[in-house]
Picture 1 (cartoon, one colour):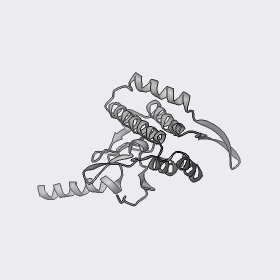
Picture 2 (cartoon, helix red, strand yellow):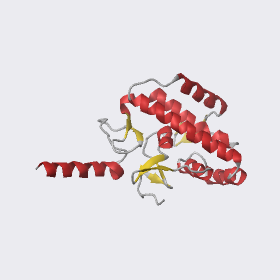
Picture 3 (tube, helix red, strand yellow):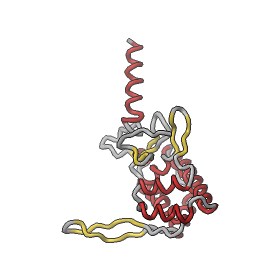
Length: 205
């Protein structure tokens, strides 16, 4: 399926959630009234990690050569899709003011312990900065930034800034100054909402 072009898209994936875990959730979206799976196979998973700048093209090529099309890659894909939908349920509940379930917290802590993120110190001009990174050796290790992103989302996001688009299934953290963002993006749903509102006003007149 041809994907729309624009700054919200990168290599066929949407990056508008302002948060890694939400960008991961947004790999299942609605197009033309139908749910579309953007991660149908392990190759697509590798492309998403490349687009998200979590792995290099060389790492993606190596993983594809070693595991692409294998039963192990299929199990990893299934596990990632299951994790995504579990996180989606938690995010929807969190948006409504509910707490994250104990079982999800335990699962994230298990993943964080088994597949940890790392920190390194970089030179930044005349100063220094830290950078998160990870060293995937096995396909299961790819879960590291997803688990870390989910943990940071639940720990740091303000529930009233965690939103689902009013017109589609996409999620985002509202980082606007006023906190009034209602759509996944102006390009995708904002303009549609404005057109609908304009049409409604014309009908009223």
